[in-house]
Amino acid sequence: MPPATPPRPAVSPADGSVSRDWTLHTLATTPSTNLAARTLAPWHAVRSDIQTGGYGRTGRSWVSDTGGLWLSAVLPCPGPREPWSILPLAAGWAVIKALNGLHVSGLRLRWPNDILSDQRKLAGLLVERHSADTAIVGIGINIFNSAETADPVLHGMTTRLADLIDLGDRTLDDIAHLVLNTLTHAHALLLENQVPRIIDHLNQSWAQPRLVALTLAGQPTACVGRFLGIDHRGRLLLGERDGTVQTYDATRVAHLRELE
View 1 (cartoon, rainbow, N blue to C red):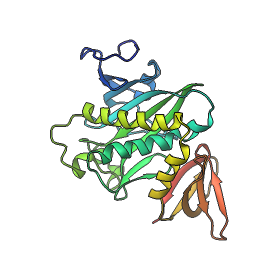
View 2 (tube, rainbow, N blue to C red):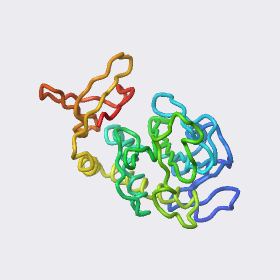
View 3 (cartoon, one colour):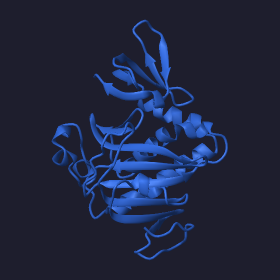
């Protein structure tokens, strides 16, 4: 990968390409784009044709065959930590906005990091703090690839963008630029402390309470209740049978499964 350099108006194909303030590096293969991004400065991103060791929130393997968008972006997170606590949710919102721009409808974010179309997973995210003032946003979107062919266990559980819309001559880099641009917008809202605006948008998409089973890290049994959205800090709100509402931080949740 080329050395990290400040964003610039144009670069050679060997170095990458620029989307607004972003410099996009491309690789043929890498164990993980999130790991590769650790060598990059803010406002740089890396896309790989294949990930051989992609991983999700709890270390689950991430099927990352050719034809998918496997992208990691480095964002600066200056100042107080609080607005950045909802960065994973803001990034998910940004990906949905980018795909809406391609006229993909009916998408929703399954808390905290899966993007679904008609109950099938289209995309997932993994946000990791790289340092006190930077974060790496890892994004995986099924575009032309077939996750179910690569892993039969996923049969009936995933979908891909090419099956939802006519992509025409759009390339993976084209879609990467769209995602990076909407991620820039979400980042600007967090910088301006517009957290309530993002949370309002997300809660509107979660207006219909769903019955879910929530498993906490280290706990053998799941908590069952109605997913009611998130509070002002991005914590999950779970309505229980007795009418009480419990809050859960994403770091405590090992798995969330929708029951309806």
